Image 1 (tube, one colour):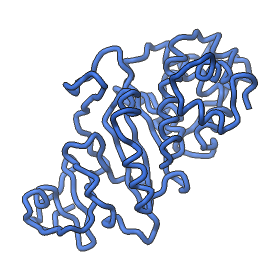
Image 2 (image 1 turned 30 degrees about the vertical axis):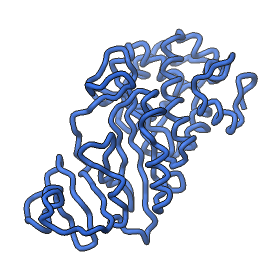
Image 3 (image 1 turned 120 degrees about the horizontal axis):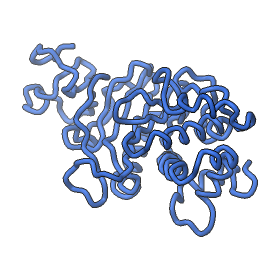
Length: 308
């Protein structure tokens, strides 16, 4: 891909700007070599773009990963209406070189892009990131996520936060409670992009996991509901995309809460209590954590007493 102004190749680690008349490299835009006017534009990176991550927490201003913290990185797929060209997406919201998120081409989408965040703690996502500003802007400019056939919400966590057995317990919960996972994620099993392992359902009382537990902390391919193939992260791939702020934040809280839950329970407890044990963990007592998640579980009809 070449810049329309300078005719130089646009490499995958550089952003580019999509306009109706052509594609421009970020250098030409930055140096005002090309007049893009006051019109709207889209800063895009290629699918291969993977910058060095900067980590964000409420107390850390060095942008380096702190040991003992759980970080969540978001990949949100969004699509435009077919009659809304991508060059009509406003760049006034985006300061691409300094934002805590960026936009990438996603070839799995027909008319869309992928919004990728830098890794942040849950507290940072809730209190500093200002997802409401970004999500409302996408809604107001004709983008969709939930009401599409293919858009997903993928959440990465740092793999070093979990031990190997934590990974096994995480897989035991996700694959042992497929019904609950499908209800919460708003996505059924009929998707090639977030497949569930078979044989670990709670109804089978975990007969398989005793001899095949190693299958729970690894992936045969990256398109499983839990993707363990990445070197530094575990990817939750089962969630359907959303531009509703409350649902989006509830999903982030779900991942964080589930990690805390499996780290604090043994495999027998996770297997025997099923998703009801997790719901009791989130909603029990007078907890003031996970408020978005509590509200969303109630909306879905789940409760700590008897499930759905």
